[in-house]
Image 1 (tube, rainbow over the protein chains, first blue to last red):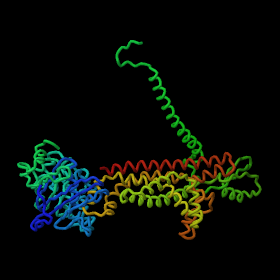
Image 2 (image 1 turned 90 degrees about the horizontal axis):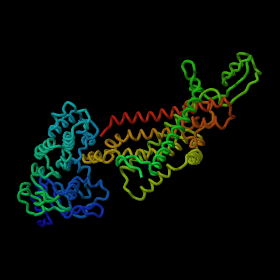
Image 3 (image 1 turned 90 degrees about the vertical axis):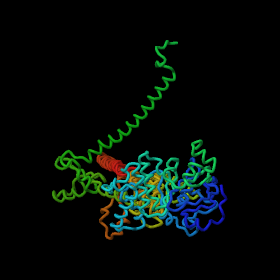
Length: 265
Length: 345
């Protein structure tokens, strides 16, 4: 792996949505990430792959400070910058950060509210109540999430009555509604059947025009199908990051090749 | 050695005999429990029904539900044995101009138990409001905010200890603190706070369980959308925990309604002239003593001379009391079923 320079080159800042420098991350005394350095470009889909326990989800949850909820989690060293700002800096409000860095979870978690209320949840808590504005946002978000046609006649029914794939797209719509810049996806298709998965993948392809997307996946084909860049993690270290077709056809590292070809993990 | 017809044939070995004996014994013990509860319900039911129900329309003894307890007057009148309450007897004497009738009197054996029902309802409402407020706040702190450190363990330990304190000790504590130190006297306020302290552990524990049962995904989903912690709790955790909190709190209601010891020296009077709403100032309402069903049972069963007339009162009160508690429990079951159907994930 190349030694990353101490100061990032100036043009990297302009393109990178997320920059990670020398990140060490701990759960108590267990080190989950070792000296991770990477640049995630804007308006691209970046896939984080690797076997279970390799730290990819941990890294993802560093980007919107969801790890703050885990009391024993702490950053040992390094920086995470989003659009040039150190998000673990002293003046950063994680609430404001999370409004701009949305997240879709592995297990779809629509709230036990109506579809409509699910979509506008993020706006409601910001105190936005203008009905026509909300109606507009609901339609736009659901359209972007490719769910509008399926649910437009039952917006006021419970979000829990939707199928698994629809629920996950509802969660995506909910994340989109607050107009984030970055959307983090933590294995969004792991509980979905192939048809629902392909719908979500199509959606990801559409969404990258508007958002920067980081997706954690166990599914190698998925990473190959829908990402522009792929980062391979192993045992808490970033082994290799490159354009997806390069990783899948001609990886630089032996470990990556072994994993991709299914020799381990 | 027996010859076996097939390898799985049943054999009466010592082990097998022991096994069936144990099984039978356990079954018998369980049936004894059933028998005991049947005995209780039948005794109260049969004896209480005689006081509470009436053979004629409207099939209940209306006076029993609408009047205060009063003294029973029993006397002979032209060869007829008459039973009358205080008031009736005075009217009777005035009407018939009979001043000196030889009469037997029995305390608390006539009239009804309306003030006791009202008092118990007031005690329950007030103390559960207080207990729910403090209990839910503590539970939110314990389950959502606190980290596992020594103070938290101390708090949990004290909640557990609080649950183990005998109710009479709560009564004594309430007497010392609310009645004596705060000078609230024997009053609804003193009773409310004493009873609230007593059920607080139940409310905290059940509220905490209910909060923990709300999937973590709802919290994370909400936080990831930029909600603050309190916004998350208020809009996306607490609403889903309320059914659980309410159903188990209703069981706390049964406990509050049933305990005699905590109100013995903090809230209950043997007899009162006025109903709770007959107060001069509205603030007096909170600082007046009340009558209560369990205390009334205690009074009519041990504080007055026993006879056939008082027995009606005892079992009548117990019957109403039991019916009330059963209704509350039934209510909790129905509420749980209703809310469970409404909220699923």
